[in-house]
Image 1 (tube, rainbow, N blue to C red):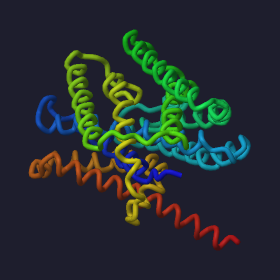
Image 2: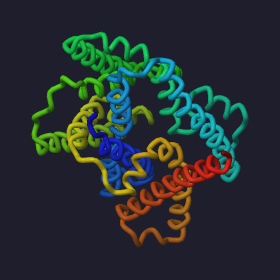
Image 3: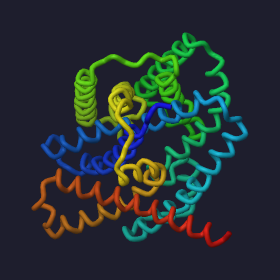
Amino acid sequence: MPNFDAIRLFATVAIVLLHTAANGVNRLVPGSPDWWLANLIDSACRAGVPLFLMLSGALLLNRTHQSATQFYHNRLQKLALPLLLWSLFYLLWSALKAQVKHQPYSLDTAADQLLAGAPYFHLWFIYMLAGVYLLLPPLRRFWQQLTPTQQTLFCWLALILQQSLHGLYFLLALPEPPWPLWALGYLPYLLLGAWLTRPQQEKPTRSPLLSGTMLLVLIGISALLYHWQRDAGLSEPFYYSYHRMSLPVLLSALLLWQLLQPLPPVRSRLLQAIRRHSLGIYCAHPLFLDLTEYGRQQLAQAGSTTLLPYAVQLLVQVSLVLGASLGICLSYQYARSYWQRHSD
């Protein structure tokens, strides 16, 4: 089995960094040096979600020793409780924030968010992942029946169809589909991950220097495209350059995979903990992002943050958010093991 430590670790940290930098993109003066730094970091981290899906494809689509019943049982145990608990938590958190800010928030609003598959801005991924897991056993059966040539053709046709429909979606300004259908648009990422890790797949011979250069160019293109789209007055949050299914993000994810996958396993205990608790960190980090952003706003009103460059502020905030999110995960793990030991 190939080593995916670096990919999972990068994707986890990238998503925290993405959501932190996005606040800077939204609040800083467009075109300023600090805004461009936030924009470039935002663009560089957009591949986090595609990398997670590619990992799922690599780990699950090529697996042959697990029945559909076993798969659904394992995934239900892994996803159902976080989905329910974090959805409830963030609905309550949204109500509390609205009360503090003296904004309206009703049960109807909460119900609409829940039915839309987005109780909070980041939980769309968990709802989408539930649809992916539902479709994965029949997709795996179909994938494994294909010859290597057919797998290559099917994977790249799926990606071409994804990009074509995604471009059409932006050109026609189509509405967002209901969340049970979200998984369909992201399945090509699973196919790509499975295709890249087939036993018979040849290892890429491209130079890491060339891949890194191409990645930097793509990040620059995405950042420039976002700047142009923002100046053109296109609607947020459907900027093509920033979307997880845009061509720059797809190509960035592919290049990052090729750069990160050959790296050796992670040895640091801290980095191993971040890698192991990627789902928990993903679910928890917006809570601490909100709290640290509130603290930053209070310090800004007092004039304290002007003493620190934006890059330092960003680094401190990301470290606090990531550390607190990991702390929550480790505390839950300890409490669960303690309960299990004393309940036997």
